[in-house]
Image 1: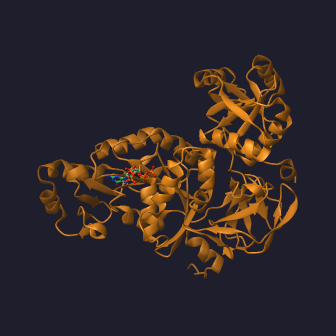
Image 2 (image 1 turned 30 degrees about the horizontal axis):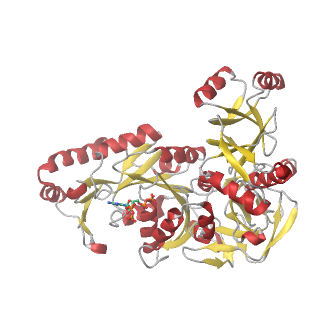
Image 3 (image 1 turned 90 degrees about the horizontal axis):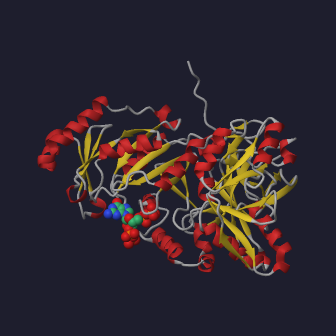
Length: 538
Ligand code: G4P
């Protein structure tokens, strides 16, 4: 007989934590869904609060304006709310103009993801890219197909699109009864009930019907009922069945249909989310796996937000608590610098305000103020030398060449770019032959930020010009002679990144693929881990 062991307070806190992000293509409904979830969790009290932040962020046309609004994007970077006894941390994944390498990195700090699709559009490019990042860690994904109050693609086609484009099995938990003007609600596969949608009825727009379901569908759907009942039968009998283990392994995604704007289908999804989504998971270090329930605090930096106060070069490092309890005033070991750090001023992110943290648990995010001493990937623990992996740099997708307007500022330019690349704001490449600076980014805004920060923080007046580069990969090989041959062959296409690692930059992804096929003894890496020598050799 199994002896029931009582959970410690730490274990209880871990069990009720859910840390997740939302992936979507712009305009699919991420902001609307976020807002509805925060309302349900009581973290905000009025519709429109999240939307107001978003429009302030996106209505701004240049970076200086965004700079002024930076406080807003920081407060909405992590939102914590309570739902059904769970403490939920929702990490913002910047998506519109502010899509950047940070968007990818945030996904390395979550335990699961909700994917929002617009049912008129299906899977769109940005979702595909974000999904690739989720796949690196087999992150579990719940899918919400949005905007059923509008006309869109047939639901069976959407499931096929998810399976084919994203390579993940789609298991519908509910099925739409019509769409657009004819949207009448959803059929729930789990308990064979109907959730009826009453348009314009505000919060009371959902009516649960449990009796005579088939007849009710016939009445609600009229001539469309026959096809619909056939689909429901087909999926119930021949469709994939939900297996939690497959969901947790990132192989299967539960799918919900609804409309975020009309607050329909969200509660059902959220109820499933708190039941099946994983609590904080163990995390890998270079030496061992750290379990969240270990007594000692450990934490990992996955994002740096700069310039909270430009006069002070103020930065906030976003630290995910990986194990143990964090308490205010705690002294932790900063392993890269081999220094102790007393954290008196940690910030806990709430929906509307930043609150001083007194304690935080695995899955929570704390913000640590610093003046440029903390970098992405930095790991903290109480004592044991540990270095977390899994928060890499991602191969850039856009490139620019730096042109300095005043040649006398060359040294300052080099210094500024070095610091910005160390911080993770931009990637900097220098050719093996020549002295140009090539910048690499995932999102366009990263370039604007770089020019602006060079000017304001380093007094360097630079401009960025187009360059004929379209793809980059870090390269390495086990056999030094292969690497030498590769370097000889591609001396004009090879660069050192900010950390001195070798990268192959080329003008087309076609040429990249061809080179990869030809040089199969060379590893072409689209991500790169940061492991400082000091810790790696401990
Ligand atoms: P995003 O964060 O993913 O970019 O999307 P967001 O929530 O901002 O939604 C994009 C647009 O789609 C918004 O309209 C929003 O109101 C609308 N929308 C979101 N969910 C639904 C839905 O379930 N049904 C319908 N019909 N529309 C939905 P907008 O006109 O761009 O903004 P706004 O004027 O409504 O603020």
